[in-house]
Image (cartoon, rainbow, N blue to C red):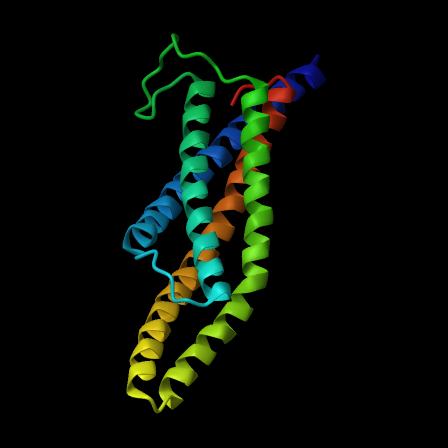
Length: 194
């Protein structure tokens, strides 16, 4: 009897720890989303004319938009799962998300991780390209070409600054999302409550 009671108490505390962990991850996710939203809103989304640099900028921008969307979806599914509104008000009329919805969100977040890995692999090459553009702008003698190259170098700099600021946030956020979703799925499969 004591073993059963001990097991029940341990299971109860484990579910509290899982819920707290997910809640902390969601709080951290809100901070990431504020930072990403600011970066995305301030990003001019212009091309510099270099395919590599423009590609990295567009990929990071798209990844940021996807992360914001996934974060909102994770938030929504989590609060539906626990039967509360975001303000903490219990609502028994909320339909709990299905395991399929959780698995779809997990596959989306996992795809984002793969996409970010490709972006991270390309950032160094794009940074080198941006440096080459700036160097060419500095060394161009023809005033007409120099003006065009300076404009191109400024745009490349903005793109690379955006990519360098957003990528670490995105990397941490997607890892955070995948971890939170996995914790929720494991909890649901074990039959415990969040």
